[in-house]
Length: 235
Image 1 (cartoon, rainbow, N blue to C red):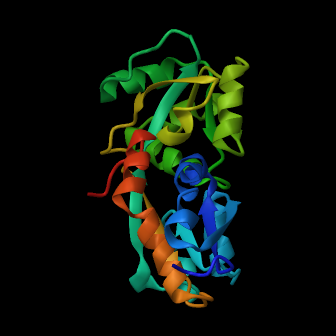
Image 2 (image 1 turned 135 degrees about the vertical axis):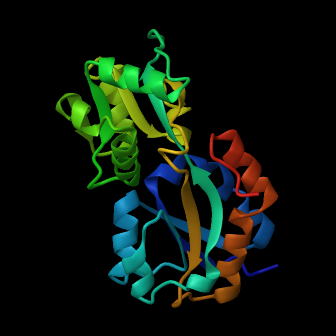
């Protein structure tokens, strides 16, 4: 058993926060290592690593070429923990339009008066949503009725207050939101699942402890929590 004083620092993106909270409590009892978690935005975490902020382990959402090019994370240590999927939601208790097929989804998006999205310049779910809507062929058609928010929670609040009819962000963040009912996920051919990838830093203070954290986050027990939260398994 490791000494309890040994601490592992972890950087994680907000879209993974609620799910991560459910598994991290078991890390210290299992390994004896303490854990210090720092949260950042999906886009911002990549930038933090690229500019040299030091964490023993970082969880990143692609693309992250600048982070890899910085030399601050070990590419050989990369471990995909799970996959994020985008979903469409409506206000809790509201009528649920059809999104069961590609054509039905398009009709629902085009018919909506307002759609809340995460700002693609801030959040990784926003960037993924923009790309998916582009592939669906509706991005330009709905651009005039979209409302951009800084986070998924802020997007959900717009729907909850009636300021937006629909919202799109990651499924795991939507499932527990008190303002939103989940309509369904976006088709994978237009919205490929986003890998959640853990890396060990090339400057890790304790390589053994850092690898232990990655192994814990990729364990079958952690994976079961991810799946329950609406993430896709990598197995």
